[in-house]
Image 1 (tube, rainbow, N blue to C red):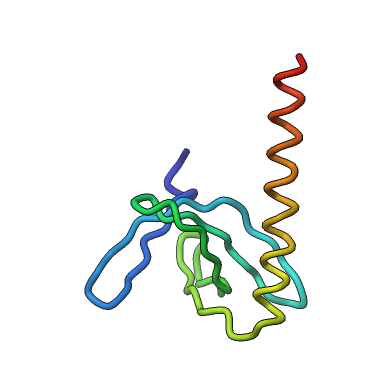
Image 2 (image 1 turned 60 degrees about the vertical axis):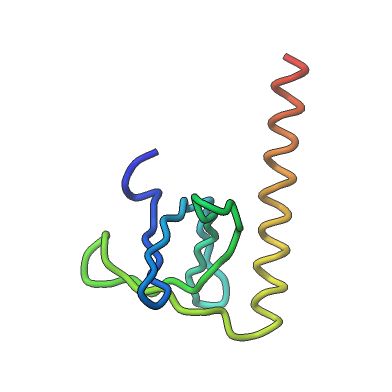
Amino acid sequence: MNALDKLTIFNGEKEELATILFTFQENGKNYVVFEFDETHEVSAAVYVPGATADEGELFDIQTDEEWDLVDKVYQQYEDALDEEEDEDLDA
């Protein structure tokens, strides 16, 4: 895991570290799906790149349609992990 795989989420005065699980693009938006390191809760946000590769901003997902999209893509991610695990057990 390298520094680019980590996020620092500022929630009021609290800082939380998170690990990026994956990113994807849909309908002209960049999404990032991440897991909080302390609680292992999975969440997602819209990512808007900044001037350099290590800059950018996260914005809350606003609509049920966007959450449905994220849920669908996350389920595909989970299914792919399960398939890889099954293949490793069969090897």
